[in-house]
Length: 481
Image (cartoon, rainbow, N blue to C red):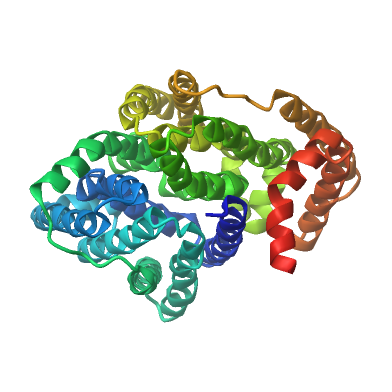
C-alpha cells in the first residue's frame, strides 16, 4: 500500500466532504439560526452515543483481523452476525423511551434516529472492511457521500418547509449513498461464521469499545451535557449549543491531514507488526506527525486573531458568542494531531488494552470537568474540559507506545513551524488592524495572505523542505507519470 498516495486521496476526500458539510452549515446557520441547530446537533450526539453499544468495538476488531490477512471471509461473516443483535435491542429500547427522547431533542425524531443508526453502522462497516483490505485510498470517495447528501437533500427539504427534519433526512440520504457504494466496492465475501472467530473479534473489540467511548466523549459529550443542562433549564441555551458545535466544526478543518494519515497508516502498521518490522514502524511515526503539525500550529495562531470575524462573516453575529470557544478548540487540535497518529499506532501493534486504559482516564477527566466547567462557564467551560482531558489522553498514549517503539518526535521542525506561524500571526495582525473585514472575500483574502506568509517562512528550512518532499514527492511523480 502506498501510504503517501492513500493519504493524499483521503485528504482530497476530506477536503471535498468538509467543504460540502461546511457549506451546508453556513447555509443552514444563516437560514435557520442557531436554535434549530441546537436540536440537530444533539440528534447527532445521541446517534454517536448509540453507535458505541451498537458496534461494541467490532468495527475496529474487524479492521485489525482482516488487515492481518488470515481467514478474512470468516471474520467478515462473524462480524456481521455479531453486529445485528445489539442494533435490534437498541431500536426496541428507543421506542420504549420515546417520550424522554422527544424532550431531550426538542423534536420527535425517534424513528429517524433508529433508521439513521442502522444505515450509518452499515455504511461505516463497509469502510472498515475496505481499510482492512489495505484499500484505504478507495474509501476516499465514500466519505463524500454523507456531507453531500446532507447539503443537497437537506437543503431541498429545508426549502420545502421541513426545517430540522430536513437536515436529519439529508443526513440519512447521504448515509444511504455511502452504504450502497461501500458494499459494492468490498471484494471479500462472507463465509461460515465460527465461535473461534467471534471470540477473537470480541477479545480485541472489548478494548476497542473503550476507545470508541473515548472518541464519543471527545466528539459529542460536551454537546450532550450542554443539552442536558439546557433541557433541565439549569444553564445555557440551544443558541449556545448551535454556536458551540459550529465552532467545533470549524476547528476540524485543521485535522484533515492528521486524520487522513492516521487512517492510512493503521492497516500498514498492523501488517508490519505482524511481520515484526519494528524499525519501519519507528520510521513512519515522525513522518506521519510532521505534516499534521505544520497545519495545526498556524491554524491556531490565525484563529486567535480572526475568531470573531470567522464566526460573524461565515454565519451571523449570533454565533460570535463562541469566539473564545473556537480559539480554545483550535489549540486543542495541536494535541489531537499528535494523538490520532499515536493512538492508531498503539492499536495497530495489537495493544488496544493500553489505548483503552488511557481513554478511561481521559473519559473520567472529560466527564467531571464538563459537568463542573459547563455549570460555571457555559460553552467556554466545555471547550476547556475537552482540551484538558485530551492533553492527558495524548500524554498517556505517548507513554504507552514508547514502551514498545522508540518515538522520535520532530521537535526541531515543530519549533520552526511555531516560529513561522508567529511571523504569520504578526503579519496578519498588522493587516487586520488596518482593514475592516466585512465580507467573505475580505476574510478569504486575509487568510490567503497569512497562508502565503507562513509557506514562505516554513520553506526557508531545508530540513522541512526535504522531509516534505520525501513524503509527498513519490506520490506526486507517480501521479504525473
